[in-house]
Length: 223
Image (cartoon, rainbow, N blue to C red; front, side):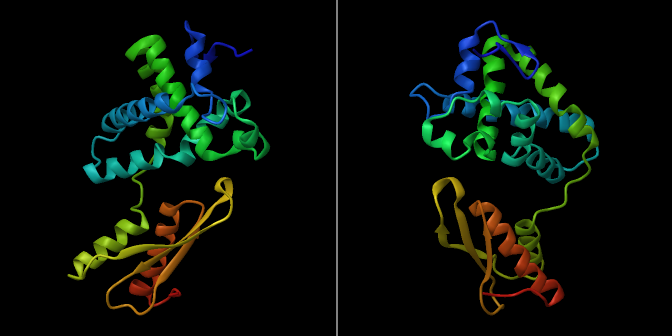
């Protein structure tokens, strides 16, 4: 039986919380729509906090800071801190593969619960809970370094060179443990720079980092 409380909010409508913690593998009525709404709410409310707490940050710095705080890994960490994984409803396949520990499922559940708080308690209740969860994180955050893809793009633009291109070379493994191999190609550099990671985006970042090493330091290995 689910306790009708999560993220410090006591639910008047416990069915909202039930749905927020139900993965699509477990039921037709699940948390996907709530996840969509929660993502939008988090981006707005965390942006508001960043705007208030970092008055000297530029638009780009605020964007990077929000991306560092509102992403799958960060939200999964918050979900673990709230022990949401122990309360997830998963289908047999996801249960067997340890879905309650997977970052993507935990992050989605966190977003869904944020949306459930909003629908149950209204804007003020949702804003209060998000600010309580993210306030210290935003306050302690420093200006986030630019990611490798951004730094590579800016370096090439400064040299008047074409932007890099990225190509998905392969995707290996089962769906719950897939590895993506991505190549980064830069005009003027021989070969391709590759990255392998559990998401295409992370693999692109690795490949961009390799290209930067070659451009800036003359190191790195091209594929």
